[in-house]
Image (tube, rainbow, N blue to C red; front, top):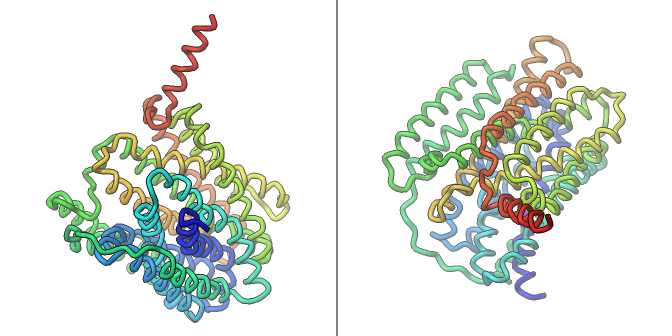
Length: 473
């Protein structure tokens, strides 16, 4: 096999492991909670711990790759991910499981950015598009097979295997990377903003974990409030620090660009709603509808089918309709379908739920593809790296906050009503996060009609169409 295909496929081992792992756990939360003596809602901490870890360590991944060599750090990242997977499998308490997921996130935060960095540095520019296409295969396949595969292992074997399966895959990836990827020497780097790293880390973890634990019966509300306060104070301190630092970890001055600012703020509301769904839906299907983890996974994986299908239409869609129209439409459809989930009952046909999940997956994928490109619409080339990091970090944090928000609404409804979780609690949660996601529609409606047109090509296509019609008259 040529190096053009071999290199991205080796790197894809890590991405496949990471993408599958992020989807298999959602179908197994109820079973894991019962086994470690916790409540299913409390396991939102495990999901948020992973996402917060990603947000904290993604900004330093590029610096690590340059400082110590991209291939070497990539191999160590896979090892840390394997270590975290083993710790998850042997966890026997909520605290141990949350800490293990955080360690997994440390490895995951390094794997994805460094895989792209290794590929860019080892592939000729005229071959990069083809190589990237091979690299993205696991990102599409992992979420499809993850839920049913994780549900199958949990139902017919043990939930521990959804983590132990990473061990042979990961070590194979480490060996392949060392044997076949070209060595990459360290490069000169600027000193990293360690003060900003600490302040941002405290801000991210404090706010997310504070929101996550404030409604947990096992902890006093003051613990959650204290975490939120510490996170907010660190966030304020970071803002002042970033303004006085020449090369801050996250350069918030980029938010002065209106289109970039719109993509970050509107995208935040969108991801708050969408991020809660993978946590809430499997619990609804298992705790209220009575499905097994395997049956639940066979339902929820259909969303990934819609997401994959959207990739084939993304370029044409934005060329034809432009950013503003499609971002408004996809955020509206997504928010509506999140709220509609609150109308499901055990009598609802699973075929209907799966069909709507395909539509939702299509809308989510189209939104994320467009939003990712749109975030660079008014960013100069010299600021692209920072814009990419800010977008990635804000994405992970808001997904984590989405899980915390959805779990918090579910738990608040449950505590106010008393007794066991019932359908009404899930309805309140889905209606709530659907409403939050709908705020993105209002924000995107404020964009000018031709926003980002030179990236999507929409204005050019419309002009060419109009010229053709004029000539035909």
